[in-house]
Length: 309
Image (spheres, rainbow, N blue to C red):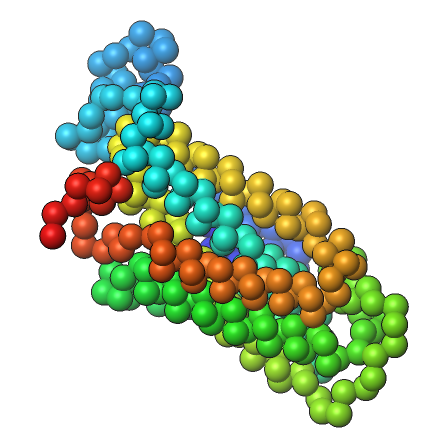
């Protein structure tokens, strides 16, 4: 839905805000209609003493062979549970630590710095890149594998955020340049020398590479891996923990981004994101198993250390 929301920003270039609001109301309206055909959750039905309806709902949601076991705290002692849970949570932490929100916040300002006549195109161009390469990732991830795409994605983002840092280091701060959220592009008070070259191209290329890298790997794949690595009986609880982690990290980074800019400067902040992207690659190589072509049972055996050759 997030990628679809980005794509829906495109009509804003030529539609009145009222019609844009109407267009934006279409997806939630469709969701509301589709939810009318969804059964109640099995847990709720069990709490109402409707066991037969709960079993039917479970089969509807998970297939005809769905098991009826539920999560217990003692399950956390099982390496087939706690290992994928840790990996799932860390995937969400690292996804947000790539700095994706900061890059998205900076999109329009970077385009202004690049002397685009219509800086409103920034969000549309960035959104289009993300939508296109997310679709590309969906087409190739079953052939290429999840792990290799995460590694390529992390490397691309590490390089691009390093280049972003170089751009901000060599470009003098402009007090009049602000983000839509009101953040200054740089809160440095010391004067910086004028750059010898127009480095707008570096910012634009870095942004394009970053968004492309994120879209083919660390954007969609953590959500896919999360759906594959959890045993059925803990999938609901574990997935909820991962989603909570993701949005909590998004809030923390967004809330503290201005303070990071003040403490580390723009260049330092993006170099910090670059180090996190590099750490993503190390984490992927060391801890994330390849799930391509494996059944849920094989993945579970991998975490328990009982997988066959």
